[in-house]
View 1 (cartoon, one colour):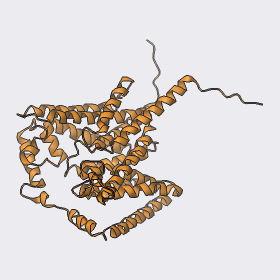
View 2 (cartoon, helix red, strand yellow; view 1 turned 90 degrees about the vertical axis):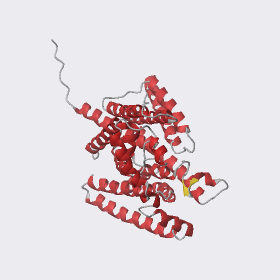
View 3 (spheres, helix red, strand yellow; view 1 turned 120 degrees about the horizontal axis):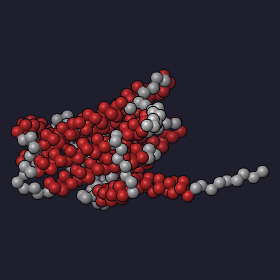
View 4 (cartoon, helix red, strand yellow; view 1 turned 30 degrees about the horizontal axis):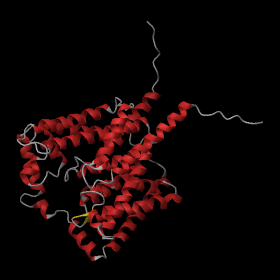
Length: 416
C-alpha cells in the first residue's frame, strides 16, 4: 500500500524561505561586526540598510521592547541638548548620529530575536566565526607572521581588524563565554569542536594586552560558572562543572607559563599586568580626570557637549557614567542608568528559567555585567557589541513575556 505524500503548501514554503533569508542577512551583519578597521565600517553601512529594509517589511516593536527604544532615544536626546552648549559643533552631529544608529541596532536585535528565537543560534555561531577570524589576524599581526601584518596591531598589541586593542579584546568575550558554556554543558564528543575556537579567541584576548579585556573575560567566566552551578541541583552535573573548571584553569596557567618564555611577550605582559599605569595616577591622569569631570558635571546639568571633555583635557573621560553626564547631560545619564538597571533586573528575573534561549541569555547576561564594570574605567558608548548584548537580553525578556501571555488563561468574551 503506497503512502501519498502531500506537497508543502506555498505559504509554508514561502515562510521557510523568508526565515532562511532573514537568518542569512542577520548572520552577515554579525560577521561584519568583527572587521572595523576604518569608519564608517561595512557593519554600519550594511546594518543601516538591513534595518531599513526590515522595517519596510514589518519590523515589529512589542510592548516589552518599546521601553528599550524609548530609553535609548531619550539618552540621545540628552546628547542633542548637550550639543547646544558647544560653541563649535565640529564632528559632534556625526557622533550623535552614530549613537542613534547603534541604539537602533539594539532595538533591532531585540525585535528580531523575539520574532524568530532561532536567530539566537545564528547570531552566536556567526559571532564565533567573526571572533575567530579577527583573533587569528590579531595574533598573526602580533608575531609579524607576514609582510604588512602590523596593520592588525596597535601600540605593539594585537588589535585584529579593529582600531583599538581595548575594543578588540572585549569584543571577543561573548563568543568566548558561549564556547566555554558549550564546553561545560555539551557532549564530551563535541568538546574539541568548542575547545579549538575557544583557544584561538583566548589567544586573541591575551595578545590584546588589554587589562580590561583580561578582567572582563575572567569575571564573565566566573559568573558563568556560578550561574551554571546555581541553575541545577544535579550533583553529577555540578561535579562536572567543578572538574571542568579546574581543568580549564590548569590549562590556562600552563599555556601562560609557556608563552611567557618568549622575552618580548613576558616584558609587555609584566608592564600591562600592573593594576595602575602611569597614565592612570598622573596629576591629570585618568583618575584625576574622573574627579574633575564629576565636578564639571555638577555645574553643567545640560552637559558640555559630546567629545568636549577630550578637547579640554587632551583625553576622553574613560568612564561611561561620566561620559553620560558630560556628553548627554543629566537627562542622558538618568536614561542610561534606568536602562542598565531595567536590563539587569529584567534579565535576572528570567535568567534561570528553562527556555530554549536560556543558554544564550545567560552568556549575554554575565558578559553584560562584566561590561558594566569595565565601563567605570573605559568608555563603552560606541561599542557595537555592547548594543548587541542589550538587544539579546531584551529579546529574551520579550520572548518570556510572550510565553507568559500564551500560558495565561483567557477571559471569556462577554456580549452586551
